[in-house]
Length: 219
Image (cartoon, rainbow, N blue to C red):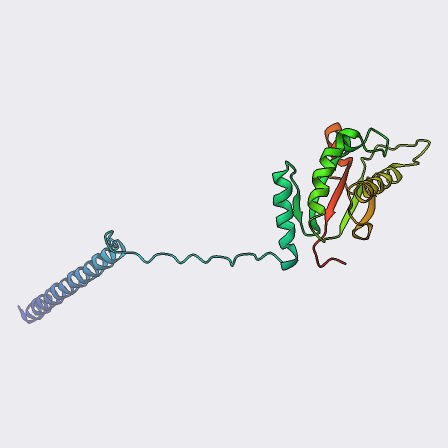
């Protein structure tokens, strides 16, 4: 019997086994390299960040300060007048239009009238004393609430608040020596309220006469 084919088959089988072992080794090495690379990637991904040394001195933030607001030169004596009035128990407000002294109607006038009450005269004297010591012009502004009126003297709140500002002008000029050339009168009626007109307290705030001391540069 011829055994040559069996010899050839045996040689081929051994060679195939050698090739299979070599492939297994390469596969194992490839898997090993992939595992090493994956571990390195995971370590980089989960690396703990380096913390700063708490003892190291940190730079301090620079705080930018706004430049001081300078009072216009013509407002200088208004601040002096404000201080002088505060020393007399009066609390005026410095506004863009000037130094404003707000006097409630209840202090100056009986309801619906333009005659200044005797009880208000000491207060007016304190204000006139400060006005006499400065050259600024002064505007007297009458205000009213929104409740309509109609009397034998006044048809509406606008006329009433105008009459009250004119009466205060007359008193300052004739009784306290403030020159009429420095004084003017105006009326806003109910059209410039300080507070809502839907409550009694709000309406009381709106019934007032304002003495506005103008800046020196005002015409």
